[in-house]
Image (cartoon, rainbow, N blue to C red; front, side, top):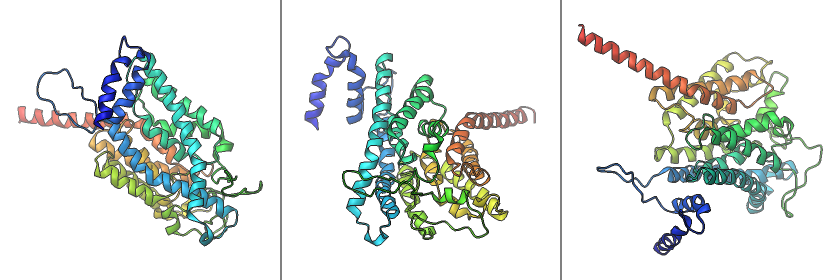
Length: 406
């Protein structure tokens, strides 16, 4: 590694002002700081503490936390394709299934990174600033929360819209009000509703380089929440692609149709352990999101009605289906768009969890409420923090007046 460090130091003057490649200074800086912790320090005089855990390292840890969801999502993509083709679960081979999912998912990751990082590189050069590192995580999140059958050109358009109008116009990483990945999905949902909902977009339907299966045109593969939203009857039953009942264990493992990275609560919990152990994610937000979901789920379950079939789900099932767990761990905890005060995190998280289940249960036209709930939480986060700060100021002023005028 020292030889690489020496090589970078030797060519660095070529990318600085006056060098042959000064127009690529931001690109070189992004590559260098990705490999090594910056050795520069603030100009302020006095003792300084140099912490190796800079923002790029934090983003890399979050990407590592997402790996269980990504790898399982690749396998589940192939698994659902095989189930839809009529292959029995015990006859599904692991490696061909995983490789099929890899080939289905990889182009989406490449498109998201190529478009998002391309825009960030261009903006950094225009502003003569260093490349922002936030898209290291966003580039993984976008494919994880979108249906596997989303056309690549739609993914590119939505990614470009979000990076430009949600992030860069506000100043780049650290200044965006809303979660960029969620706005990408919201853009797709409202701009192209037919390609982002229904019973055909969550299961890969074509062979890839001879792997997988071609599904018939009339194939339908609704997600559990999609089935629940259209259910009519007295006894709710959620089925897999072979019309077998989905157990709570299946839902926990994630062997169900859905957006690639959101189905496995087990993998989400593995990622949560890493984020909490490193102190990157706020346990206050995660706990309060779960609490809000359980409370609203319990209220809905206590008042079941056939008009809103999701009210028949138990509070635990509400946490296991859809993207609730994924949103609680990876979306709601975004430090840029979430509440920042201690008390505010509890309020913010509870609102996100409660609203997610509220939308899911009482809006049959949109069976997944986690996306809109987090975006609503993002919009309310500054107000929540302001109220908490003002309450603290008022209490302190009251104590001070009491001491001055006992």
